[in-house]
Image (cartoon, rainbow, N blue to C red; front, top):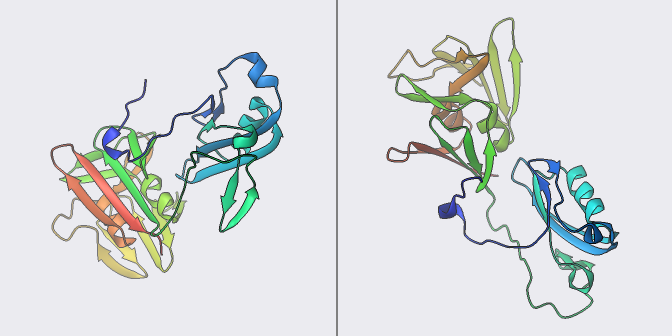
Length: 243
């Protein structure tokens, strides 16, 4: 059983069966339900925290699971089907319901924001309240938190490149270009040399067990995100408004 971060959950929806678990098709239900074809709907999310809402006119549960997998779902489940299945987007029905609906899911985006929550020495993290797992846990070194850069940069929309010859990481999130070198306390931001930590020259990019770890706060704040540290829970929250 996975830990459920109930303090991060505002609304929960129960349905079934499950279609995708950790990116894999896993349909656990009666064979009859798996093979019967009909109008179906499903909900899921990708590894980047994007919500997927799908309505299929004629599909078995197994086919619906494959559709969600092909769309990049990391987790997904079946919703109600038949006459209860409908999809309404930007003022138009993509699929009209066959009867009056008593319950609907409504998604609105008045302000789009990326929210990341990391915990020191734990590989589990949250992206917009969805749980994911890193291949290397955040650590504290010289009083600063380090982690593999892609877990914080890619959800913000940044591109990352690695030069093995110079041991340089380049992170690009327009209009910012950030360059860091393993073992060096000075980075380059849009071509300008910038100390990674003006109060501690020991804070430098490092390699541990073949993984390049970068200082979380410096990366996040340079890219325009807000960083909050919770001493009690040893968690770091990164909040980034999508412009």
